[in-house]
Amino acid sequence: MGSIDPGPYYLGSGQMAAPQAMVRRDLELVLLAARQLNVPLVIGSAGTAGAKPHLEATLDLLRDIAIKHGLSFQVATVASDVPRHLLVSAAQEGRLQALDHSGAALTLPVPDEAQLLSASHVVAQCGTDTFIRALKQMPDVLIAGRSCDTAIFAALPQMLGYDAGLALHMAKIIECTSLCCEPGGRDAILAELGPRDFILESMNPKAHATPSSVAAHALYEQADPWLVEEPEGTLDLHMARYAALDEHRTQVSGARFVARPCPTLKVEGAAYEGARAVLLAGVADPTMISIMPRALDDVCERVRSLVPGPWTMVPHLYGQGAVRALPAYQKSQHEMGLVIEFLAPDASTAKTVAAVFKQNLLHFGFPGRLTTGGNLAFAFTPSEIDANDCYRFVLYHLLLGVKPEDVFRIDVQSWNFEEVVA
Image (spheres, rainbow, N blue to C red):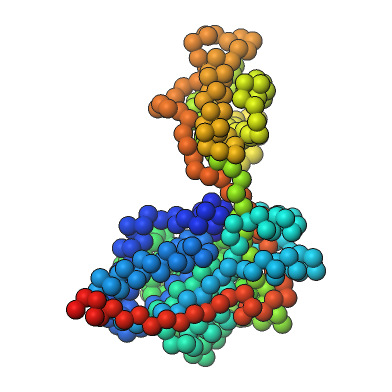
C-alpha cells in the first residue's frame, strides 16, 4: 500500500500520500473481492509510511467499508513502530549502522540519543518472519505497518512450504505489478508459483512479460542486480533463468535464498525541521543567469537584515543542475527555473521571508543589467506559496541484534457488522 519513496514528510507527519477518496475506493474493491472469494487480504506499509497513525487511518477506512456492507471477519494488524529505548541501546552498543551506498540512495550518520528522540515516528520494515507469525493467526484481513515489499507476497508461499528463493524472487517482481513487462505499466499481474519455477503473466493482454523485460527488473531499485538483501537473509539471483513460454508469459527459475544467522531490520525515522514556503520564478536574462547563485547569496544577506530570526534558504536552480550535477557546457544559458525553499519555525515567517526575498531578487541590481523593471518572470501570482511542514530523515539505518518479535506487535480482532446493516 505504501513506501518511504515519497520522502520523510509522510512518515514524520503521519499523513497519507494518496488522496483519501482513492484509498477508500481501492480498499473497498479489494476487501469485497477477498471476502467474496474467502481468501486472505494482505496489505503492507499501510497508509504510506506504515507508522501508527497510518495504520489507524487505514483501519478506520476499512471499518467504514465493513459497516457499509455488513461484513464480519477477523482482522490482524502488525504495528511496526520501534520502541525508542531499543534504538538508544542499539546506537550506544554499535548495533545501529548506516546503510552504505549499495543499500540506499542516501547515507546518514548514526544519530545520537537527542536526535533519536526528536523523530516524530520511527518504523522498521518487517519481513516474511513477521507476516508468517501473523498469518498463523488465520486472519481474513492482515494489515501491517511498514513492511518489506517482498514479504507481503512471499510469506504465505513460504508458510506453505514453497522454496524461499523462488517465493522472494517472485515477490520482488510482482510487488511492482506489470512494471516488468513490455510496455511496463501498473496493470495487475498474475504469478503462478510451483516447486521449481514461477510463471508471470500480465492481466493486460497488451503488456508482455518477456525474458529480457523480467530479467531487467532485477535492476529496479538495486545497486547490485544479483543480490537482494532481506531482513532474514540474501536473495541470490546469479543462477536465475528466464524462459519465454509464449509471447505473453515468462517462466523464471534458479533463485537461491541464503539465510543469515540473525535478522537485520531497516529502520526509518523522520523529525520536524520547520515550516516551509516556496518561491517559484524564472530567469531569462543571460547576464543574471551567469551570476547565479552569487546573486541569491547577496539577496539572502540583505533579507536577513530585514527579516531577523532563524530561517534557511534552500535554492534549486533548474537548468543549472537542480536534478543532478551538470558540467558547465550543459548548463542552460537561455532560461533558468528557480524553486527556492524557505524554512522557518512557523509558516508566517517562512512566507514573509519568501515574499521579501522575491521583491529584492526581482529588483536586484547587477553589472550589465538591461532593465530596472524586474529580473524575474512569474507563471502565476502569488508566486510564493505555502508548502506544508518540512521533515527530514534522522534514521535510515540497519538495526542489528534485535528479535523481530521484540519490535513488531501483532493484534487480532473480530469484526461483526452484519447487525449494523440489518
